[in-house]
Amino acid sequence: MDDTPNEDEGTLPPNLQFLRQLVTVLTATMIIGVLVIIALIVIRFWGDKPFTLPDQIVLPAGASISAFTKGDGWYAVVTGDQQILIFDAKSGELLQSTQVVLGD
Image (cartoon, rainbow, N blue to C red):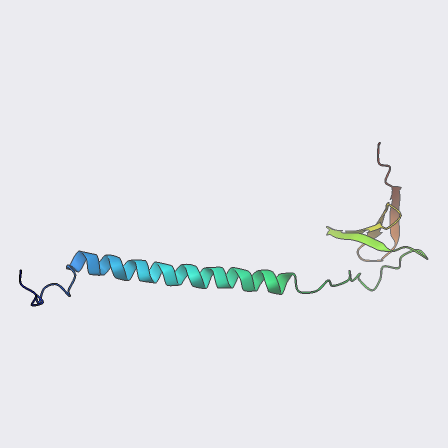
């Protein structure tokens, strides 16, 4: 047996060098992608921000906001006592009020 190192043992064939570089680039891309997704999740869900209503909408006394949505020309607010209040987007006038009845 010959213990002297062969000069060709340390180099890879060109196709394996390309494959090795490709795997390295793909690994780095996946790591960066996971870090970006984690950062976006943290930014998106950082702290609970309260609902903000447009200035022209005035809720009835004692009503608390449970949900808010905006449509074409109207806003809807769901209150804590399960009422849906629909307001005009331009004037802020209450157009309709509906009580939500949940079946048992």
